Length: 124
Image (spheres, rainbow, N blue to C red):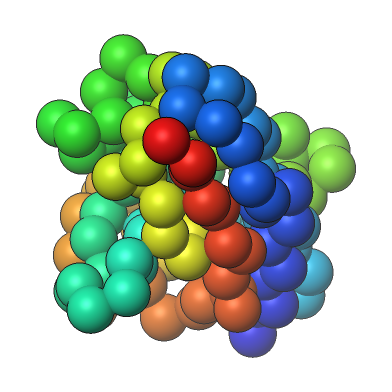
């Protein structure tokens, strides 16, 4: 079993930056792929980014490519999502999720472990 806890969300102005964190406990974090998803009110949950177990490979949604960076620190059992040049349409509840295996899945069904989410609000 894996427990995930997000933190670092908040309110930021358009063009600003924010870093959200995902702290893991339980199963060996270094063996897991970690993804970030987000869900805005009235919309479906969507993929944002994913990083493989070692941090050597990443994948991003087109909507955040060039603005967001996913990273991880296996010694700290923590993954991060650095968000720059934020836009109002980035406003959402951001979730981290973990999965076993070497793939970089972009669908939520591929992730058995989820955190509770952290709210990111970008004001215009």
